Amino acid sequence: MSLAARKQYQNTTVRLPRPVYERAKTVMVKSQASSFNDFVVQAIEEKVRRLTEAEIDEAFAQMAHDADYQRSSVTLAREFASSDWEAFESPTPHEQPKNRASKTRSR
Image (cartoon, rainbow, N blue to C red):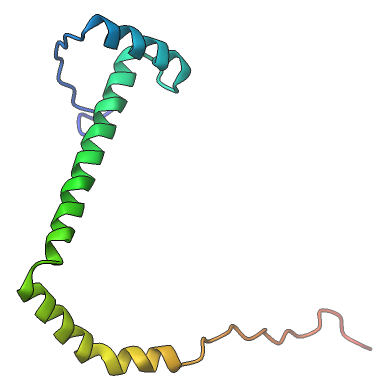
């Protein structure tokens, strides 16, 4: 396996309160994790994903209060209104069945 294909790992030590550790071990057995380490990695990845999504959601929420964004959004909508309407009115193209020659010939 090439060095580029290998995952890079960083060892660390984590101290957990005993009740958290015991509950995590119990839940880990029921999960798809193959080891406690994999379970912890999956839990951290999930938490990071949720926090990242929350940051993105917050950035989008700020757009609702951004007057410059609102103005540019309305301007863009007006500029594309006619082409959007044309696309809406156009019939959806349907694939036409292909005419196939008969595989058997009459003699």
